Length: 255
Ligand SMILES: NC(=O)c1ccc[n+]([C@@H]2O[C@H](COP(=O)([O-])OP(=O)(O)OC[C@H]3O[C@@H](n4cnc5c(N)ncnc54)[C@H](O)[C@@H]3O)[C@@H](O)[C@H]2O)c1
Image (tube, rainbow, N blue to C red; front, side):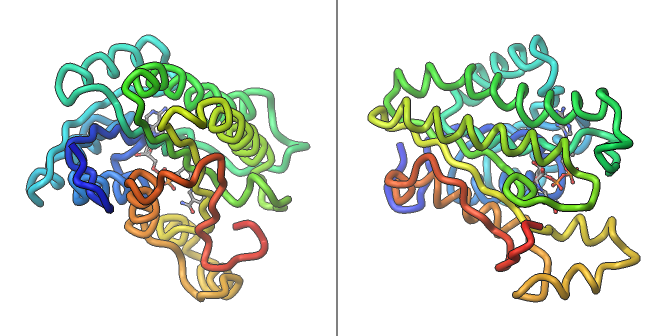
């Protein structure tokens, strides 16, 4: 079992959407801290590549490809993780950008745009929490980390209303579930991210103006989110629950 401090030896972690970017950084850092990691992604080849890289670095990981919005696939995936690595002690709900997502002003959006955000950021996250929580309560130890966004708590005129609404909703769940399970040894928190490196790559045309808005004058790195996740999931994180912690380089505009 875990040796205390930041050591996660003996813990099994599931990171959703971990085949690249932020999720990959979280999976790598949890593994470096000693956890056995199930690397989930919609795309099997991404999950396998990250699990392979963790193995090459001396860690323990398996690819766990499935669509977290598909309840049956989720149940199968969790059963497989349980068989291969043990029950999930650490859950990081990171998958939050629906495939092919577009930014669009709310007035021009269709109900289907909202549903995709709500299905992934709220319903899927709730289902995974609901599935792993009973075992964590029974074992008297667990860590749930929800990846959120500054868009949860600020209005932004960049076409992310439904996304922001879904992130706000899941932060509400974090606060309530954390309070319900407070005495149990299970903590539930959210990390609300500002602009990360991969968004900078997407926003090729106006990267400099985006960076100019960030007080530390750079974009966030996946490993920095991974480090925060390690802290929350470690024994040092035990007194932190029900919180939304912003990792955003000091940005005041919520991005
Ligand atoms: N990148 C940013 O600037 C930024 C800012 C704020 C918050 N976030 C949050 O960080 C998290 C990760 O974002 P990212 O930018 O790294 O995303 P990304 O699109 O670069 O990577 C996400 C991964 O999730 C996978 N995925 C998508 N839908 C899935 C599903 N239904 N089931 C399983 N896997 C699925 C994708 O295949 C992809 O590999 C999200 O929750 C996002 O809202 C990111």
